[in-house]
Image (cartoon, helix red, strand yellow):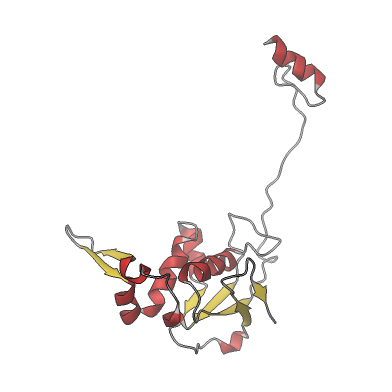
Length: 178
């Protein structure tokens, strides 16, 4: 105990033993709704790896690329993903990766692999991958509503004038083009 009080007396910071604390308040930054400016980005997922696309899209949806990012506020942008049916999966993983659903009844668990899901609902695989990378709860659901996934190369959001967002699987950062 004497050693602890010695270090407390040597340091410039106040000591817990003396019960002297500075009057410092650390405030959490909360962006106001007027501060949040939402943009629209378009991602072409043709030939890109599923997980790499999903992680970049989730980061944009959360707003982590903005200086006003706060983990408890939805500051992200809208993302449109086209060519979701052409997303690549690492070798041999398409047959091994399973997607589960449960009907709510006993014994109601059904599973499909990635190739079956790609045939029936090609956009659902990417949507589920992004959903798993977002926060759980109401905040994550509001972020997921800003994701628009389309299996083909066209989308009906041309009026929003989305900016092209190129995702290179070998690069470490995204490049936002105008």
